[in-house]
Length: 193
Image (cartoon, rainbow, N blue to C red; front, side):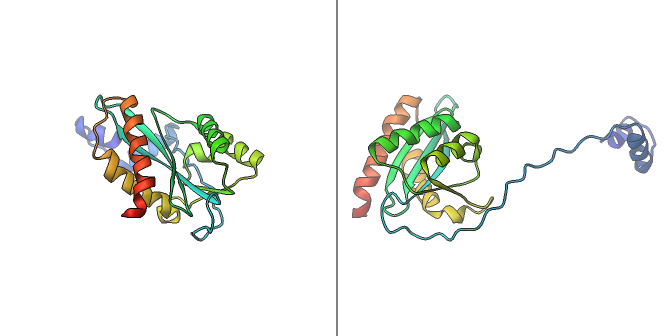
């Protein structure tokens, strides 16, 4: 970059000399190290036999009319393909996620396994501690392999195509109403399709 700037300024310099002087002056730019996601054992995607054995979770993003982000947490039961919940908020961190799961536990119970991607909300301390205290096994898919979480990816396609792409949300309150209405219709009418 410095070599190019010098050439644009009219200096006649050799790029190797610029690199050598740059290094001798200690001007090396540190390269940020990429965060390594720990490799986990690959789990085959097997359809569970009964409800509440395995849930899949993921996030889907959209925008309101004023351009603000809506982050939708989608939760699907892998056995029944039922949409357990879709929570639309501006932001959902680790602790709000665990509080939401505790609310679902009081009405529906909790699964034995939760399958997610490697998002910071799912891999964070709050979620790991919550799952360990409740005896729930967390299964994270390999980075860049969404087919390992195919049930939620399929659901997210339906959700985006039939709900998010069809509606123009003027605000978060309207999004809550329309998304919940679509979720109920999906759960009740899906078997008739």
